[in-house]
Image (cartoon, rainbow, N blue to C red):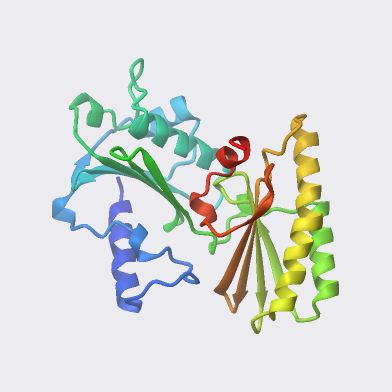
Length: 287
């Protein structure tokens, strides 16, 4: 397991020393998503062949570290990558979590850290934490009792495989710059969650309500329409499945002060739900 678990502990302690209150603008993930349980309370499971199994069964070739432990009836899975991580790596890691901890689909082959299932270890919840260079990027929790998921993605960390650029985004940025004269920085992210585009718009001072409305109008009347058409053309489908959510995140000096989410499915509208836990795909095809 190398020193991965100690890095997690050190990060948590550092966060508590720096601030007792986690904020959304921190590049560190909010403290509620870290594992702050005491080391002597954890039961670790070991697998000397985990690296080989991850590569053979899940095409995960670039995991730099991993560990699995249980504490308080919660199964905790840690997977560490470096900055070169791809979207496929993240998808495969989440697939492992789904098959190993949620579906328990291990009937025909031994999964990494198979000991948990071989010994029929009980747990009522399972958590996947994915780190990139010791920064928590993804937290995903499955509650077996309620059959519900809780998802968090740290979008403050720069990860090349999340960066997004195309002609529609370039046109959107150009339009925003022409209509709103304040100096601004616009970064477009394609979150690992999928089905969503995130527009991070930073300015020195907060935007006025009329300026925010200009951006929202550009999203709903132009950008959403173009992205929908692109999704349908690329996937050769009659409905949009790729860009179902467009999120506007407004910041001043990296501190978020507002967020707006546009649902770009069949029943198009602005929603108030947290986009990280909103099922865009299900919502679109239930209507």
